[in-house]
Image 1 (cartoon, rainbow, N blue to C red):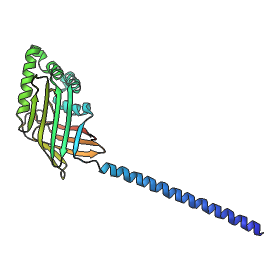
Image 2 (image 1 turned 30 degrees about the horizontal axis):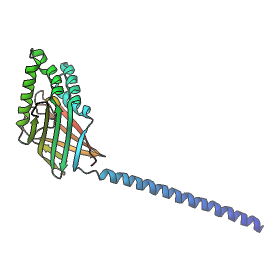
Image 3 (image 1 turned 180 degrees about the vertical axis):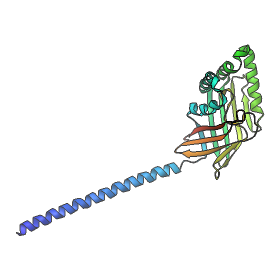
Image 4 (image 1 turned 120 degrees about the horizontal axis):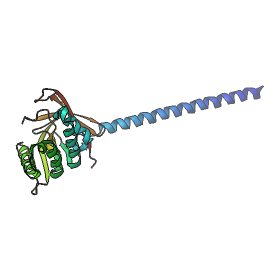
Length: 237
């Protein structure tokens, strides 16, 4: 009889021990998961706005600009400009330090011109030589008219390399303002007001290591609503 009771007690102790171990394991697993989630959340929070951000998803960024600058009957021209800008882009990056920002862009003028010529000059019976001269002059004048633009065409006129300085960062409003629009190859500018010389303000958000700039407004030519979205990825230094 005593042996039977002892056996039952032993089984109960073993069973309770298993429950205790299972509970500890469950708590340990929950703790590990919670710590992992906390670490992930901390990592997300630790991505600082300060530093260098390089263009991310270039094609999608260009599409969000070009879709508004070309009428439906000029979609072939849009595609030419899109492919040309993709091929010719050398650099497109933003550097942020506290409440200041700089945008640096560079692209190959020759490749860019081929796309620009096909959309702007080809049907006007203008030779490529003359078209290239006009394009180089136009790009340089356009870039130089902005007060905070530094750089321009290289001496051999093969590359445009420019920086828009003195950008203002407002961390409360989550905006970045440049006195000139962010630019890409082929006179592609991230603005809803291509005829305006006024500063351009982009709203920003950060998710993981991606900085997203958004600009919304009405197109000044067709008076249609536009939303331009540009994405930049944090450069690990």
